[in-house]
Image 1 (tube, rainbow, N blue to C red):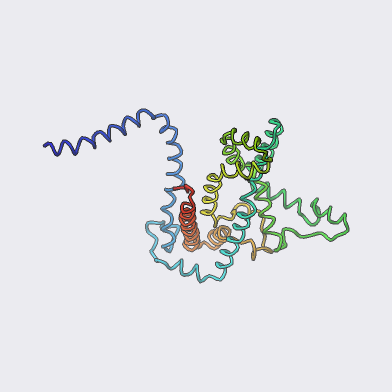
Image 2 (cartoon, one colour; image 1 turned 90 degrees about the vertical axis):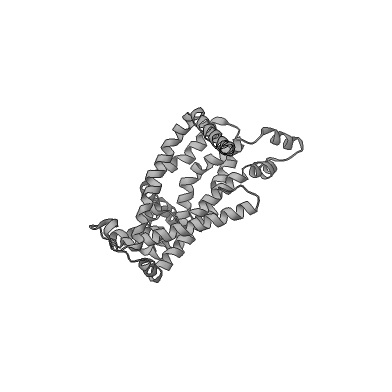
Length: 315
């Protein structure tokens, strides 16, 4: 009996401690509940649909009664002539956005942090993050009009200097760069908010000590600001790597056309076109599952490298 009492005592104490902690911080758990409910409904529940990738899915029969075909759709996917092209386009566009778009919010945050006039800083910050709330349908229409070869303001300026108009949206060499530029313009201001919050958490005494030592503003940014927000940069970079196969479905769908399919057709647009156009739901679900698995593997590997380099990582 003594042995049972000793074993049960800590367990009961631990359970009681958890209950007291739950009651003490009940308001925080209530605030957390909507986010958990959102993840459960919109992130985890739809994962049940991945079984379509292993079925000969029939809309009338549904997921429960459709016949199983195993890995047939994955075999067809890798043998499909267009699949290597859309994978290559997805990687190229996503890497271009990563290389040129990811540093943009960091640079913008550093520049905003150096502004001394508070009102001017707020105005600039508002102007830069407002495009995030504009739909890609609107943004795509704006840039299509601006870059139009007949009535676009850019080509009007080019013609004013005596050159021929450029068909920007139909040029395979320029279209990817247009995607990178528009994505950076739209999202840089919104992404800078996180880095600005991290910069505000830096101890002001570090900058004062650097001033005493004669460090210029550029030196202070390089030796104080950037090292202090390094962990934030690493975490966001890891999350970005995990979405390396998300090249921007809405943006590409709105802005691309048949003349640039060879350089702009990505996995998401391919899945959308084939899945809804040709009703091949099993094949397109297999493509989406393939994209998610590769992203998950890349995230795990990148997180492992980050921890080996002394960073905290995301888990």
